[in-house]
Image 1: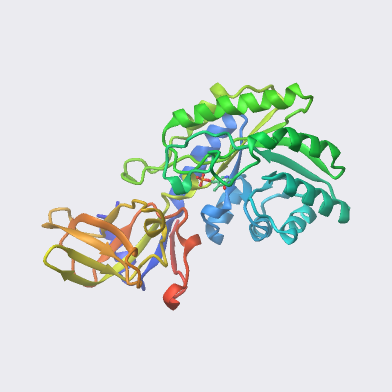
Image 2: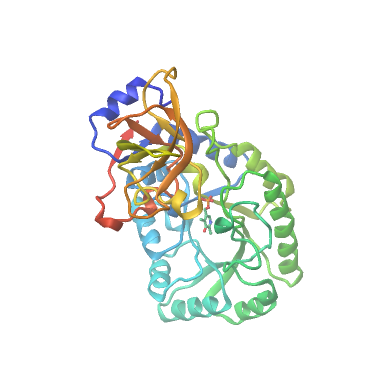
Length: 385
Ligand SMILES: *Cc1c(COP(=O)(O)O)cnc(C)c1O
């Protein structure tokens, strides 16, 4: 894709670095997800934390997705973007009183509750404000997502969810709370999961916990299995759209449910990762005795994933015909941190000052994690329809 001279012309006149969003690919991805979900009667909430860029959000909202939020400001932003309150969920281990009140006032679809104390606080605040809150209890299913340990969330050792040993107590506390209604169970095991057997294991655990509640006379209307579907960082052009059919099929096959029970998903990365590219210019090249460096004008302040969890992003030179001589480069940013590197020993066409470099699959957990460390400039954008 980025061997494309049309893009080279489009980008050449732009000040770098900037995020380039391919809205056509975004729409294709959303349509593919929506079609596969609708076919099975599944509800999909978009996890705003992956990317809350206004242009992207309005496209996602217009396609009929719900919103999955992890802060009061995300709840407010979803409302402002036009997401309907009855399609908004609010998760997170540390919701502040102010954030809870914001969500209560908007009468969102459900709070995904992560501790017994949080149940009590929501109940109390709902009472004070004359509101009722729907809640889903987040259960830690102890399923290993086989992904990087920083993005694994569903193991007993992680901070997320109500510990299994506390569920009996949580169920009793809910019965005693006058201002909250338990409508569902919530699970989320991690991110960038490409092994479908992980989701199958999740289904088995979900079935067990659902029966556990039903055996105690608690009806579960909503089964929320979270997000986590991964994308192909190695081959973004070969696999620009995640395999939503295969993903939803696992849940369709293995989740036990009756016709009244709703299945909800919270997808972030799989919806937005591939449509975003960080575009940067080579500032300097430098060769030592062992290394060749490409020093870019983008760094961890624009895209933190490599520095934060050694994430791989495909790096390409923009333009050219593929016949150029190649060299191994360490591709680094300008920030004063040794971890400010996008990739080591990356084979690229021989490059010079001023050349444009694409860092692919940067649409999820990219610009949302940007900072102005080193007093860097605000992020810039370019969109194509
Ligand atoms: C981050 C998060 C998601 C989205 O995860 P992806 O891997 O981006 O799909 C969904 N649900 C919860 C509770 C989350 O914290």
